[in-house]
Image (cartoon, rainbow, N blue to C red; front, side, top):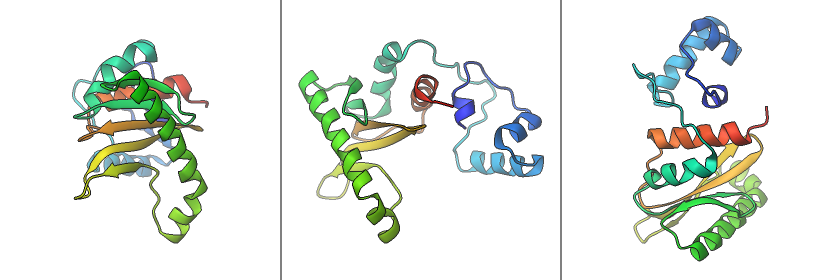
Length: 176
């Protein structure tokens, strides 16, 4: 999946390429692809979407607003705000710092969450009285680098702008 998202051009579907990317025998690679499509992890459109081009600084202002109903912020695990939509600058810096604290807290308590409680997720949320997220902190892993996508309101992570965001982050930050 990382190899597909990091490509600068469209990759046509070929059984032999799928086999090479997965390292599986052809039949198993086909089964894996079928499951990924069935579960909605991969979409095979007739006409592929164009690949987002440009620098991350150019693309974030276009991509971030469409990722949630409310405000959006992208921060790294050190608390640096890479981009945001809808927050005041002071708010953005404070939330990016809080996001770094959440990453640190999660890493400290990962054993408790995973082994003892059986919770494998790494995302967090501030919820309202009925349990709906008011502000979600979604951890994005790109190789060893961690980013937090902070979303206010309903997230829209099943759309092309999220794929484009991940593609841009992977092309810029992934170390093979």
